[in-house]
Picture 1: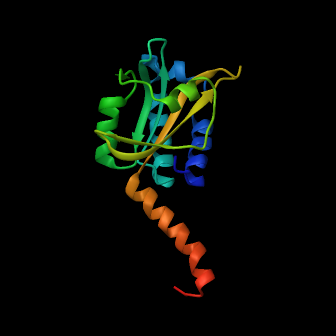
Picture 2 (picture 1 turned 90 degrees about the vertical axis):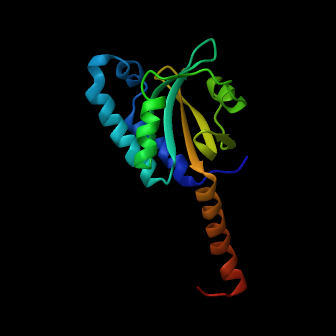
Length: 169
């Protein structure tokens, strides 16, 4: 896979600071709507500040069905669509991918994979989100558009290459 930028790692750390693993079950209760909206707002700020297209938290049951806890997008229109389609309580029966299986086993990885679905062509990364007992409480996923990722790679390449060639910008 393609290595993600350090910003994505920071986004995952910040997500952990915003959303406590114990909150995952709590947020799914109807009386927690205010807390849920606060978590969505804060995660959306992370999404925007780290140049992520999407950031999402979900669980996977024994049948391999995804149960979304929260999904946010940096773009206003895409954020509305993400909340409507993959917000709290939404499920997805699409087949579980190998990186998700690894994360469900508690494995962490810097490797990314390419998703090409109704949300666009994305570089994606998923990681386990552990509870206080070290068990996987949920998965955290992030998507970055291919165009944003490629632009960042070219920029990093130029930053490294230009001093070697002596070309000044």
